[in-house]
Image 1 (cartoon, rainbow, N blue to C red):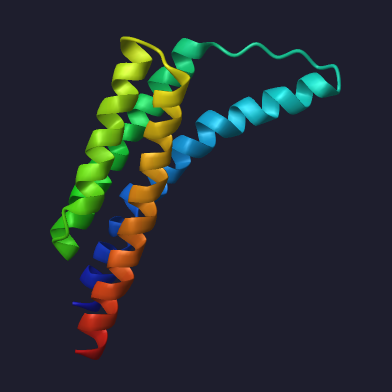
Image 2 (tube, one colour):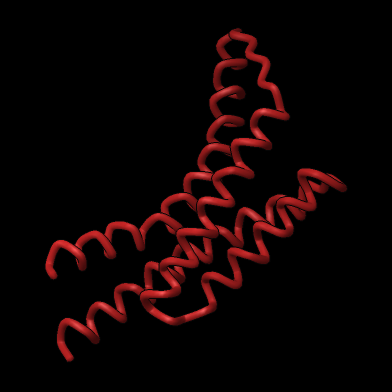
Length: 129
């Protein structure tokens, strides 16, 4: 029983981690390219590959948030992640807008923080209740 609970706990962090990873990959890559260009190294990144990678991470994040929802039954982080993923998909594949992109990634970070907060509260209630 303890092994099953440990596996559930480990898998419940999948959505949160991949939400944050999608943000880190997008803006971390941009920061790395900017830093390299400051020292004179020119790097060209295929935007299509980046979009596909981030989209894949968004799908994985939504699956993880869905699993996390099954454990704590608070729909907020899942719904916010769904909205952010929908917004980012629209930005990536239809009409690019920097403010909407920033809004989508900010929503992912907020959803991840919200999910962490709910998990801690639920664990505290279950562990002490």
